[in-house]
Length: 196
Picture (cartoon, one colour):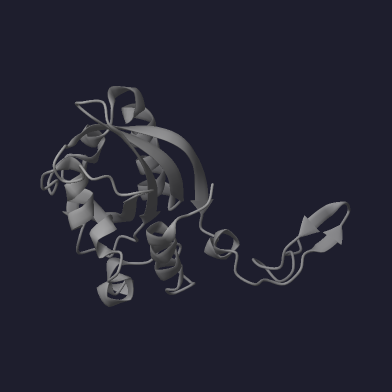
C-alpha cells in the first residue's frame, strides 16, 4: 500500500518532531507546514464519556459528507460492517501510540463509490486538551459529485499499522542492516544490551 501525497505529507510532518516522545503534541505540528493538505486533515478528540469525536475537519473532508462533521462521533462515519474494526484501530492509535494507514471505500446513497486513503496518527496528551489523533482522509481522484452527494458510510479496506518508527515507513535513508545469525539487524534503540 503506497501512501498518497496528503497522508504522506502529514506523516512526515508528524514524525519530524521531538524524537524523545512516542507521539507529537498538537503544538508540534505547525499548520503552515501542512497548509497544502489542511483541507484533507482532521483532528479527533476524546470527549468526557470516552467517545472519539471529530474536533476539526478540513473542507475536503467535510465535502465528502456534504456537511460539517465537527462534533460527530468518528464511529458514526463508518458503515455498520466496519465500525467495530475502526473503533479498535482508533483505540490502538489513542492508547498505544500506533498509527495506521488504510484503504477506504466511500459510498453515496445513489451507489456512487470513491476510493480514499486514511492516515491516522497519535497525538500525545499534553495535560490541557483531550486532542488524541490527527488524520488525513484523501480521495484517490476527485469525483464531480464531491460536495453534492454525501457519503453515507465508509468501508474499511486493507490497512497496516505504522508503529512509532516513522523513518522506516517514509523510506528515508538509513544505515544498511547488518546480517546477524541469519537476521537483518537495523541500528537503533539501545546501543548495547544491558547486563544482568
